[in-house]
Image 1 (cartoon, rainbow, N blue to C red):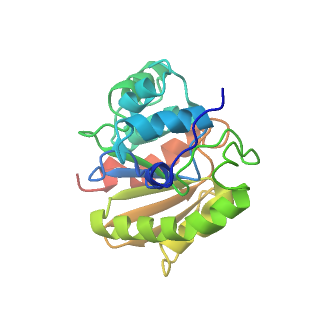
Image 2: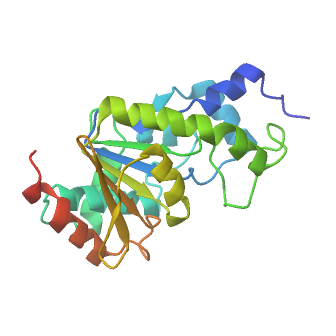
Length: 230
């Protein structure tokens, strides 16, 4: 039996998804797009997702195990713990607890968002040809408005730390913060800029092999709790 098509209103709803957690939090994480994704998952999002979700609630709504291991989330958790000066930030169990109890929560310190609103399994995979014939057409239509929205939200909330990850998208992150002069640090592994109250870090993709423990420690030592007012 053929699955029902998404209506225009359904498509607009999923394209307006904002992210997970607390927009007033200290740490904003900005990536290219969520991993995973399928038309079946998109239908679940249409039926059950609000514009901003709690990460734990979203995992449950999509039918995944609440203890799902996502390397990106684990690196985020370690980075926040290190920035906050938590002594045991390198410990696996400590990061796991932070991910389970704090990451992407309404009352927490983090907001997770993306340059593009639809999740994709891989960069070159496109499961939504029923909505946009190609990923290139989707990006061309959606990304400019998304950049404008992100620019407006950053200006409104002025999060103290904005971590933009994925080197392949640094140029688009720079569009959000046009006019900001970014300087390289740590052998050009990151770029650092400042706009208003926000410190902006452009980093590699948040995987354990690219953003290693040493780099997290360096970032925390330079920009973390001991060097920033709480």
